[in-house]
Each structure stands twice: as structure tokens, then as C-alpha cells.
Amino acid sequence: MKAYTIFIAADRKEEAYKYLAGGETISETLQDEDTREQFKAKFEVSNSPQEGWDSLHIQLRSGFLDEEWFVKITAREDEDDEVTYFESKRLGARRGHMLRSMLAESEGEDAEKKRVMEEELKHRLQWKKDIVKKILED
Image 1 (cartoon, rainbow, N blue to C red):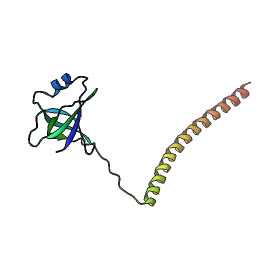
Image 2: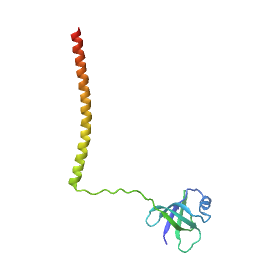
Image 3: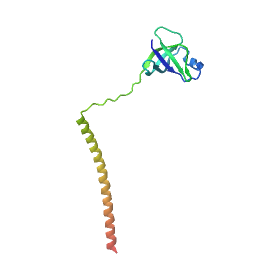
Image 4: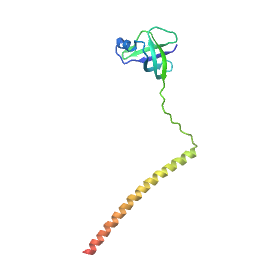
């Protein structure tokens, strides 16, 4: 028989009884007492032992309930987190990729610097032409 824990956001026993009573299927997070794994599941709760049901400890904000409760997990809702797998590369291949990406970055920065310098030089040349034109007119 496995043991699970559920946390109920209630201060008093009466609030917890209202939440657990009724024999309805509940969808909530449970914690496995052995592995401490938390998982979301759909389950039924009972305060009387039945065959095939596991032990349930109920935790409130103020502490644990003293009575024995039992749980039957009907469905486990595993979260399918997307996992990204990276392909392992030799050290030389990684260095090559890193150098290529750094080179591409610097080429983009160099192009921007070149454009700014050209604009600055054009501006200076125009300024010098204006000065020469002004001197020649006087």
C-alpha cells in the first residue's frame, strides 16, 4: 500500500470535509510519500478502507488531519514538457561553429562601422567644400 499526501488550502477540518466529501473525482496535485514526487492526478477519496486503495495524508494550512483517509488514483495527468535534445559534437566542431558565428557577428558590426564612417567622411567633405566655396566668394 502506497501513501500519498494532498494539500488543501483550508484552515479548518470542516472546510476540508466539504472539499473531500461526495465521492466525486477530484483533480489535484498529489505527493508520493516514498519518492516525494509531486504530480497532478484525478482521484477519488474515501474515509473508509477499500480494496486497492492507497493511504492518503491530508495537509491543511494548520497541519495534518488525524483521521485515516484513502485514495484511488483513476488517472495521472503527466505534464508533457517539451525537451530539447542537443546533438553532441566533437570539440573541434564546436570551436569551428563558435568561430564562424563570432566572425559573422563581427562582419555585421564591421559593415555598420563602415557605413557610419562613410557618412562621417561625406559630411566632412561637404563641410570643407562649403568653407572653400565661402572663401572663394569673399
